[in-house]
Length: 291
Image (tube, rainbow, N blue to C red; front, side, top):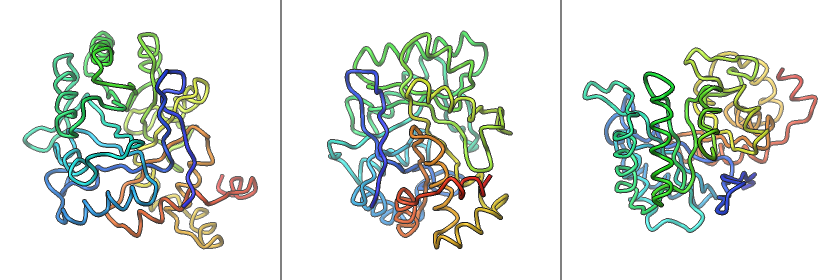
């Protein structure tokens, strides 16, 4: 297995080395990302297999399930390997009707951090991504400041942003160090699209992350690419003897040395294929062909 690496918190006294690609846990939950997986033993086995294949970066959240992916990670991997990086996020919650709702008031993000610590059996969260706060820019600042307080208390090692706009990135950067950014970005959701249909600015923020040496973590990188808009991707994948999903991951890794893909899957076979995608080399001619 071949892995690239990226540094999280490169400018701090405690940087973390993440191997790429990582693994996004959200798909391990039940239907509509709610409840326990249909095959719980299979989910546990997949997480353990990911570590055996060299994955050391896992993306999770206390509102996945809710609480399901955190508990699966703890059951499968605790006590954790020394180099394991569990990246969680706060700023959202799930309603009783399975809706996705903001949960970003200062007291709410503090409670989310405590939830994540308890569910993951940790005394300190290696990386916490803060999602969008509802309301005014002052609400965003108040919540991020609360997370900085929790970082000072030792409950968070590194702070990142999720679903962030360029303005929010600069607002957070003015308040404290931003260790990573997790936004939508993919082969069909590109740098040239300043605002995606979801309202997130992936491409512009990738440029800022490169400037500040911050990992950019694209989510839904396969879901938003497949199966549409893939004619050239399919043609090149066939020529190279790889899957379209693998070529999507390889394309991401060729966009920037700071990209950390987190493809999710419930299949151990697809997990291995996703990890092997890191060894796929694309020539300048092949990248030009993809467009």
